[in-house]
Length: 480
Ligand code: NDP
Image 1 (cartoon, helix red, strand yellow):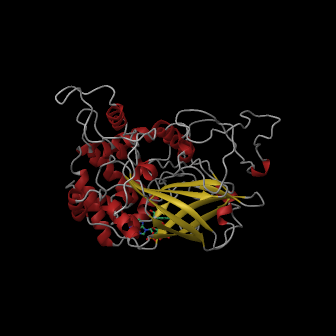
Image 2 (tube, rainbow, N blue to C red):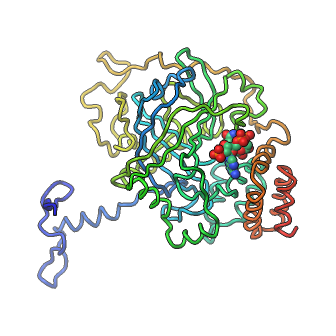
Image 3 (cartoon, rainbow, N blue to C red):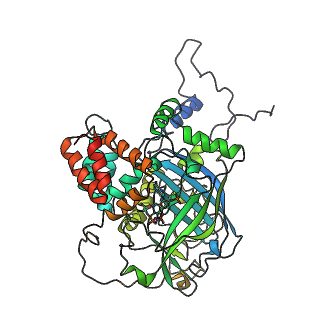
């Protein structure tokens, strides 16, 4: 048995009694001067921080990324500089719609967020287990998320809200098809892929830009859970996926993912069949094959859930030299939204928290003060720029190549052809074996059954446009 340390207050003062309050006489009231009691209660009242609006329920793990193939012709990012190079990573795997205590085995998209602690600062790869998303313009995002959350009056979730929105926003059909397919309920975190989903850019030493998509393919193989089994487990063990990941890592059964990229030379974006910056589209592998980069392995459990998983804060704005953004409208909005959400949830100095601060790189800037500033706040160093006292300066060597833009400022729908929203969902439907098509159709019909007929009919038109058999199957399932 370990020898117990002396209990102290937060100020480090030894505590004489942690079980009985200080009272005026044996039956008398509690004394104000029992500040240990007051402090204990007051801190307890402040234990909860705002829950994430989305991705509230999650499991986290530490791990390592190792480069297996040379991609330096595409990117100068230091983490890819040589085969064999290792970088520490923290990952947070989440569901999207449910609250912090919600069940893991529900039909939902999964968040797949990685923080690479590189020597050039943190690279956050904030993705999902699906290669596309429901919408391609962030102006729709708060409305879409409202449909996934709870109704204003009853505080109940509502399939009518989901299908009403999806039936009126056909760009969602691709993601809806993935969500209602077998992959909508993974057997566990180790058994799903991760995708950057957006198009990003790579910049090489010659300052050439390439458009890039990120893929993390599970080395455990894709495994999904049948809906009946998922429903049963949701009732019996709502934290099933969290427990499964933790226990796998504890026993040394480390899940891993092979990291691949798809690369599009900058000039090809203009005339490609698909808008390469549309988040509802993939780049077919036939056009842009997967190129191996390295191996990601999750091999260490967090010691403290709140400190490491809850306080971890990922942002697509965190890119390192050699990796950058693209004109993807959803990505542009997420560059702002994630950091803004963390400022609200954790405070303006959230990047100074141990799980978020860079490990391989120094932080040198002129940001000072603010709530909860845990470091030395820049010490005695100069806090303005320009200055004559050796303060940090920007380095134009990190300047990106200019991006050519033309056209009128306007609000563009970004469609390429009338079939734009239907071809890729149809391709996905057609690549499924027929038993999987049947399960997809049954799952959709099972959910659509609960919504008004007018919405059902609008959805049938979309499924039919993607593939005749898809539309007819759902219509039959609904008895239409
Ligand atoms: P490919 O046949 O070259 O690639 C198919 C991709 O689909 C593979 O990555 C595979 O992932 C994945 N896949 C296979 N079965 C399913 C399923 N039942 N549900 C979801 N994904 C599945 O075809 P394309 O590249 O032309 O893509 C065709 C369709 O596949 C797309 O419209 C898209 O819906 C889907 N897809 C495409 C991806 C891409 O980046 N091109 C990525 C993921 C899905 P795995 O090898 O892990 O089984």
